[in-house]
Image 1 (cartoon, protein in one colour):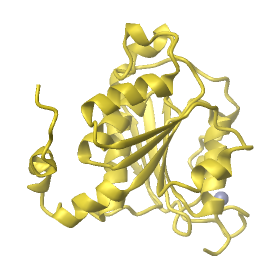
Image 2 (tube, rainbow, N blue to C red; image 1 turned 30 degrees about the vertical axis):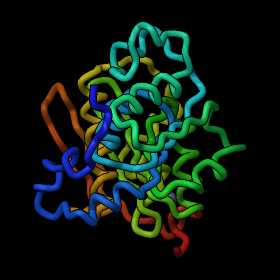
Image 3 (spheres, rainbow, N blue to C red; image 1 turned 90 degrees about the vertical axis):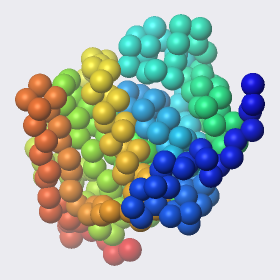
Image 4 (tube, protein in one colour; image 1 turned 45 degrees about the vertical axis):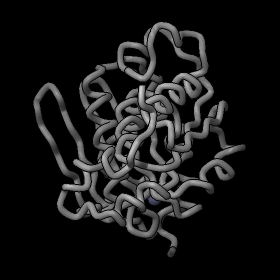
Amino acid sequence: MNTEHDPKLRYARQLLLPGMSENAQKQLGSARVLMLGLGGPASACAVHLVEAGVGHLSLIDGLRVDDPDLSEQFMFSGKDVGAFRVEAARDFLQERSPELSIEIIKEPFTSHSAERLLSAADLVVDALDDWQSKILASDVCMQLGRTLVHCGIRGFEFHIYTMIPGRSACLRCVLSKTGMEDLVSAPLSHAAFGPLAGMAGCFQAIEVIKLITGLGTTPGNHLIKFDSLRRDFDDVTNLNPRTDCPDCGRPF
Ligand SMILES: [Zn+2]
């Protein structure tokens, strides 16, 4: 088996895209993306980032692979049950792209480690399961000036919000402006619809690739909602920083 890869061939089809220059490919190669948690959207997002050529991926998660993970996480298989999710994910991703750098951090995301962990990243992807941790990620990303590609999944619906400090409302403000405050206090749901999680992860990967390469537009004050049962997309706009919010309302 030939394990040598020519990067120019590997990314040849991507490089045919309008605007995807060799320089854009290099930007992907030098980017450092941190994935918080390995919940529902993580598999699709991580695989597409790695295959697009994102050079450095850090995975943070303290959980072990459980049987129910297999129904929505194609990075894991039966042989991984009981192993740490970051180790199983690293092995899966590294096999697809041996030349890329994948760091694993085998610990839960908490307020004690949040600032240290997030400060090393260019971009942060939210694949966390619980809403308290999502709010913590938003708070710390705002404080550090790190862009956060947030995802929330509930039942057959998901939303994606790219939070760019200085241009975006923080997650607390967004949830209150969009009538979704109840997500934070609701009991953690383990309900999962595999294809929807995959879609959400693909959306997150697209956002990350656009942000790194400068392709297209990322307004920073829009939230995309998708209801898979109604086949309905909604783009909620004008989610600007609030002047009365200590997190998003301060100048950057
Ligand atoms: Zn705010």
